[in-house]
Length: 313
Length: 283
Image 1 (cartoon, each protein chain N blue to C red):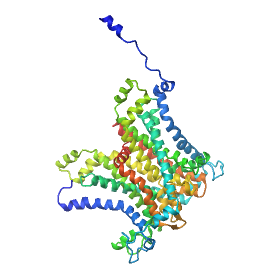
Image 2 (image 1 turned 45 degrees about the vertical axis):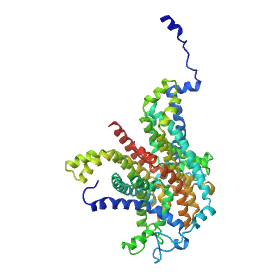
Image 3 (image 1 turned 90 degrees about the vertical axis):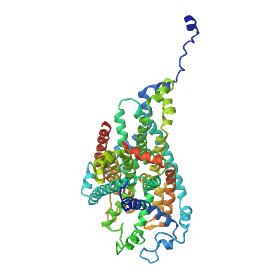
Image 4 (image 1 turned 60 degrees about the vertical axis):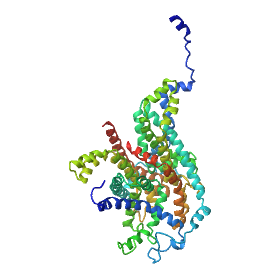
């Protein structure tokens, strides 16, 4: 019997031979190398290379069509004494700080509202995200038209509510222009905060709040000691992302005021554009852009440390 | 739930929510009204007694007609569509491969490469646009759609990779191991086993990438110069604003029509879009 069984067994058939390409791809390291190659090429060509080139440009007096000579840190020295650059730095800091506080506060409020059960919840959520998904430049034009001093619907509304007596020149008044730009930034950013924080809220078990309620915690206490600490990791990531985007903002200001009136709304990016593209001083423009880098680097490092920490918890 | 009397529900829930919705959506309503408002009504100061802000009794299609007949709006839409679709496809391709490698394979410097891609995710376009414009000129890509098709992936790939890594990590390894035991190559196991399971993630990443490309402004503004090459955002900005003259009716018509493709895609895939947002900040 045993002999018959052995005789009946078919001879061993080798697996079909594979081509050289497949054999290389079967090696884990080579496979990873080829998978990462397209990404590495694109990011290297259009992120790493421009970054190096930006640093090199920033230490020259290059203009459009003129390669320029090495001038060391002269561009940065010029910027230090440039009153418009100082205004831009201060505006950018103010713009980022104020809008972030408002976006977080309003976004959190909206997220808490949306975290309840009510009719048409999915529809409401879908509509609320519209300011975030509609191209910024296009919706900003609607705001520019709403801010127009002569035809402003906002002025009309405020006047008829009895809040103002004369017209408000939203974008033309240097005192008000930055506030107007901030309003639009907050309007655009709140949905992003709300939806991200809502996702964070939905991972918190309602039983925790119920248990606290049974123990006699008031709504504010339940928020302060249960919801807020549990939401903090998501909040941190959202805020850091938003800070980077806001700090480097360009489109809103470019459309609404172009940096004016009298540079009252000039930010890093708009000033870099004005000098680098408008005036054609590539070296100085690149220097202005790069001046953003230290701040961005700090935020990125915080972000990286924070994400590490959350992962290892 | 809000406990207690009905007025509490109104004051603490219905009223604030209604104010949020009105505040967030009003600019879009304003866009629509302005689009169909005749010029005579459009340029009536708000102080005027017959100023009717919230509606118009004589709707007109003149602004839309001007936009479609007298400007290159159709061309801009096609350009934007072409660029957005291509940039999205390239980014998805790169993001899928890179995301798979970073979440599944063991190789030297995997960790630092992952961190590197995450950092590029945080690089804003405004940091690099001046040297990049120079590079685009040197590559002779200036004023062509390829300038944008190749540069948009720089901010889309990191996002796609990051998002898809999250999806890949959630797929059990046993699934591909089975396929490998049955004789599938690494490539086959990835393409035929893992990618199909990650389709929701691919959709999220794709929709997000498409809307981000459609939204992009500063690269398009700096890299393109001739009117027939422009994207919607740049075309409207430069061709419907001449000096100090704003063609408000047509501007709003352009803003409205230019938003339609994004809004349509968004309305079909809201859930995937929301998943994309929440996935992108999960870290």
